[in-house]
Image 1 (tube, helix red, strand yellow):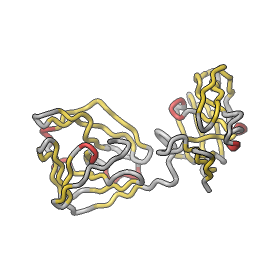
Image 2 (cartoon, rainbow, N blue to C red):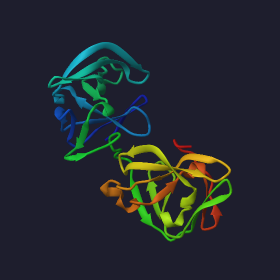
Image 3 (cartoon, helix red, strand yellow):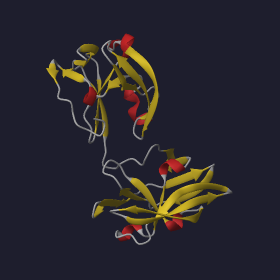
Image 4 (spheres, rainbow, N blue to C red):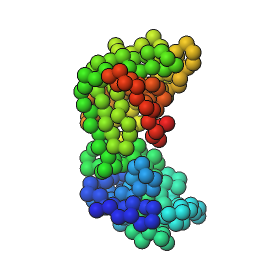
Length: 249
């Protein structure tokens, strides 16, 4: 059961969690702790006894208003040093954090939940992703130009976000799309590639994305394109939709 201490939500996880650097095991825990440092997703904190790598204090301290002062550590394993990759809140006002180590997710080369890799950040146990086939009529307009018109969307419902309408490429004005070098990763869907949209009136950067090889649980959106509801005008069965407010607005 999750506990909240001040502004920090904490929950003991039930998955085995491992972290690696340069092929070497840094930590292996059967009792990871999920800590919501920010509201959108959790971070793994691991018991000190489950950390196999050597931690060397850097002498630096980082302050959090909710968690207190963090002592920063280099992570050293098999001759490899990762600078300031770990932190401990030894005198935290949140007692549950004092015997735990936070390994920076992006500083590790690999994270496993059980025997499967995870990406970007730990999955939130309170977040759900449903992908449903639909025959609803979806129109997407930008600068008054219809850039997509489809009767066969896949609608992705993700906790805390607006519905996303994934559309077949033949239903999109591909002639208006311009390739982007941008890529992002999602722990639930995988790696997304982007396009800009050139309506002739303006170029709207990174406003369309596609998961060409999504993670297994999101295979139903493979090869489909999606527009940011927050940045385009969408009509659903002919009814204009309000632009939602989200972290992507």
